[in-house]
Length: 393
Image (cartoon, rainbow, N blue to C red):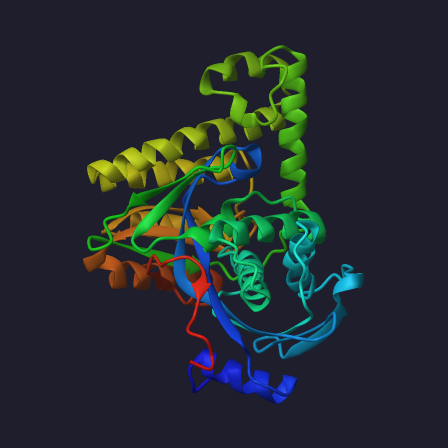
């Protein structure tokens, strides 16, 4: 696209909808530094928003119809706010936050919407959360609801988990809505407490390497892992190892693992071991950042990757190789898959001065094994979602 994405989006908006947009918002994708598959277990996560975002333009309508188009998909759709129904395609992620806003009792007008995104689809950078938060923010501003960014996050989460039907946690929309430049967010997924953790942005870079393996979160493995965690908790409660009122694996600490070995089948034990150890790694990683101990932070990334590969079994040969190549490169402190796994991306914490050399080494090594060269992104840690200057301004 030769022009700025927003300019192109607004031109197409006026052409398709017959008038200019009233509001424009942006919502970024996210990368999770550590704390994977802990969010739906009410645990700890440490994501940050990145400088790849989704733009949403909107204008209210006088009826209850919604019309939306996507530049990247070259697709458009219409639906009625009084008859929202899943379609099994990208439009579900537009309908979802509108469903959740209505569920909260907010009166929405019909909307004309236009969407463009630089968050790669199904890559592990949470394009779905960026879209959900963006639509929530655009609908809020178009309808004058006066919501806060944390409300956009909760609306996006409710829509994706209950309308689309993905058993996701709060991490992705919270990171997209509440991100802070040069900081990671320590999110307690039980209390929803968010604490900004400074990252040595001048000293390090985050490389994001796409595996080229695309995945669908709403399918297969993700739901299976959610069910396995629930089943393991049921066994732990029945055996008196987890408190009777416990609601998630968050209620189990490392000290419970010896007792769990006696009551859980090996597969479920591996799942619990990952979740329990990963929660501990999140706080240890925050401590390492506070001390400026990048070697310790990198070791925690590598330990997390081993746990995701061996105990949670969500890696792939492509993800394994990307991490091996990164970890072997001088200047790389540590690597792991980011996102749910089964494809998507890997994350590499590298010295700023070595970032280009590490990226080249990873790309060349991957091409040698798999015959294709990944385009490795250097991510900047960005602010969360917000309104852009009004299109008319």
